[in-house]
Length: 277
Image (cartoon, rainbow, N blue to C red):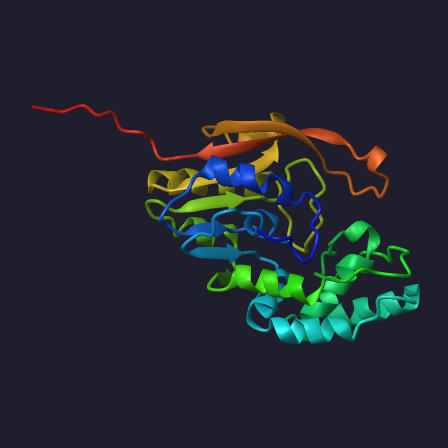
């Protein structure tokens, strides 16, 4: 277990053990098609034999790839970035370099980590053009990840396949024994984390391919709001957990709205042990 290097709104690191228990263990491939910061994956107690982490955001995959393959270079690049004397002008300069530069490599990864610490409330959000548009968090000093932390995340990603694809591509690859966990933008909640949209149509598509994956013998667990439109979109799944979590992006913890959340499971049908003569 280790902590992710960036923080996504609604990240699931605190629920990682529960998610792992709900999915169970298998000799199949473990998939996270909406990996984001990777909280659920990095919080697992048992390392999967084989894992594929995907996201349709190339910046996310670029970050994880650089940390997996070049951790020492990422540490060196982080050391070149300031942790004190941070001003709005400096933040805007590094944000512009992030938006205009290549979305791969150690320098890019270090800058993305730095921006996630320096931005408002640690929020990662992009506009329709795919540009980071989070404002400065008004913190003149930052605590950046240690070299040990970067290497721990790199070790967790060793041997993991990282792909920049849509969730449909990964769900379509399902085989018996595979495990899937998806944490898509919540239906009816704040979804502007990336340039792409994720509305009712995408949730309906997710449910369709989750059902198909279960028919192939895979287990698919999806997080979302409890009841309402989400439950309608995920009709046919089984609710295996309910709870309440805060999803507001407000910096004031007392103003963060608590909404009901659920975990929806699609699993292979159990065959009765009837012997035919």
